[in-house]
Length: 256
Image (cartoon, rainbow, N blue to C red):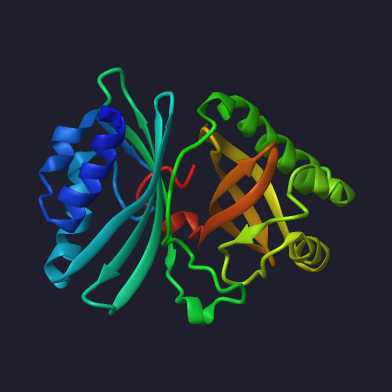
């Protein structure tokens, strides 16, 4: 694991889980530009925001489930169980880093965790195994995801869905959508959902992450999607969506 990815994980585990807020100064660079809309820029903004969180929570079970890196960027997918089930969250975070592997910019999406019993597909939203494979195919797999968004969501060539998603095996972790290729076809045909733009695509081996803005039933969302790819086709998908609040509620320049 690289220093940059280690810094991102330590910021979560030492800073938020263990309550050692001052570590943000150790793991961040000369600047720390913030895109979590309720948090001000800088290490002080981070510490100010989480001060109240640490005071009102006693038990913070925080686990980094998946982590990837691509150039200066790192991504973590995190499960949080706060105060023994009082609240459970999925957080997805992307960081840019400087030449010294320090964190200099942060984007995130936070949403409630739903139990398997609430899922239509029987798959956990986040918990499970993780292994990076096909490290020599990173750029090839990123290209698949870029083309998927352009062809299917922007150009609406739904008939070409089979070029990108496996018709034989497609594991879905969005609790509202069943497994399988046909379920994606139904979703595209029946839901008012589109991606306005994709801000960033990053990947490592068979796992590719995208971060973008979507519109669903008239509401704007910030969305992280995580895809696993086998033999050039998407075979597994996780996502995390958060409504974008009104501009007057932002403490910084916004989600992107």
